[in-house]
Length: 138
Image (spheres, rainbow, N blue to C red):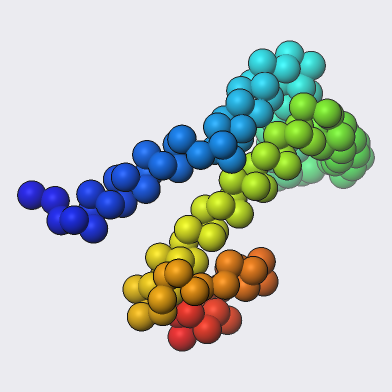
């Protein structure tokens, strides 16, 4: 039998999936998957990464080939990140990640006794990712 807290967590999961930030993120993610030009660049990027990893793991590496692959990988990465579909997706992803960080901040600080209604979400922007630097966890 599930507790009330678990049921509320399930309800939170449902609310997240109905939130416009989540919906927008999923649409933009699908747009990335449907962008044939972008997918081609991403496939080539992954192929070149595999090639460079293979070259690096050889007993006798060809530094010129590694340099050439590095240059190609860097250019592909730049092209991918400058693609309009990817730019829009990345913005939507950042908004969704902020929503999740805010939710996590409220849950974490509430579990340490803070009032969930008064937790300042702006403090979450300074999160380093390390709980040791967060006053809510220490």
